[in-house]
Length: 130
Image 1 (cartoon, rainbow, N blue to C red):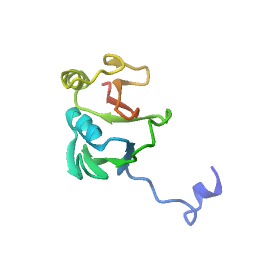
Image 2: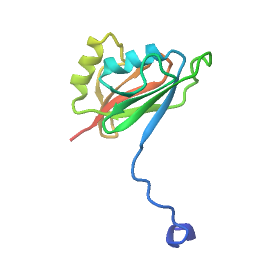
Image 3: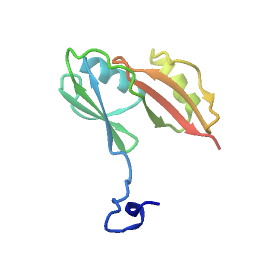
């Protein structure tokens, strides 16, 4: 341990949770439609807004309009835990979204699948294996 870890005067307050993830979009209407079809609830903003907030299980997924910026390079992915990965996969397919692969069990202990949103952001729906 370092002095920062043991000295209460230097220890940072604990991180409690992720409040929100914000993704850039070149087309707010298209992005809102995509996430609404996946089951995210609209909290603020919408198709014509410059900034939109969607409900992500008590946290927020924000979309910010960044016209003309183009698709981002690979940056990672956002992983959302869902109650039933296979049911979520069937719902996503029914909404016309094509995931990268069907649900699978991962060696790290999750069942998951990935998809890419219209702006190139990787999204994963997952659930810990029991």
